[in-house]
Length: 295
Image 1 (cartoon, rainbow, N blue to C red):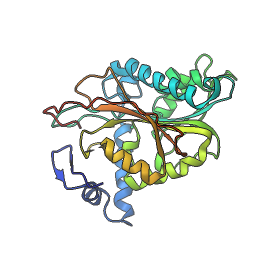
Image 2: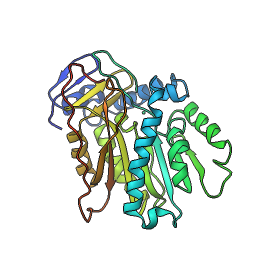
Image 3: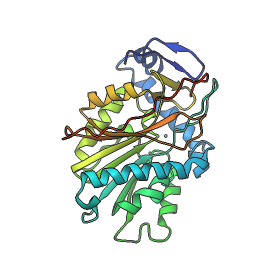
Image 4: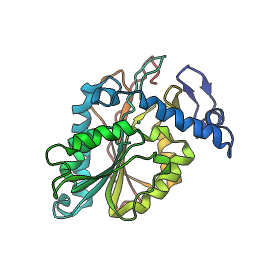
């Protein structure tokens, strides 16, 4: 990615390659890369396992986030599966936590499945089984406890099945298990190489007709590096370049509405392994430039 970017201290980089060399060293420097991931997990180990905690103090955006995700998911299920999938046994994988960021010259907060917020409020209502992946153990414990209440693990119709405590860069899903792999506010912790490697591995986890949903913060240009939690917010063009490297095709995208203006824009991408038979594009509004920098 050749576009310039900056970090949360305002330091500028000519391109992403320059930034990655500084953060994780040259290829083969495993110690710096290991440190990058260790520090990212350590940041989240100090965050409270609550909706407000994983949403960086912006717990009030939960309803708007779920509403936007549900509308997007509904459209995809009806376009991709006969009858919206109601006559099929659907299985999803939830990889999310939270990476909400604020417009400012200082920095804010930021990641897999977290405490199971998206599973409990959305996915488990549409899928017969949902697996959760989260590298921070106390978040996964909170998700397991939350989803053990009422019918979430007891029902044979809709249930949380597997709880994986593992980092995204090391996870490989079971072959042909999932109709949907939902990745929200966590991919920013992966380096570019691990981003591409993850999606190439994860493609084998999709059933025929299955797809990925990636929901992430979007930088207006280039990228913004958060030095505190070791994550990167990428621009739309940056993401699309990585999708190409992964061998994925953009099926549909949509902007999230109803979030506070001081936060990054958030965009949803539906990605498939096959070339879409027809273009499914939604026009996103271009945000006017604002004086702050989102970090």
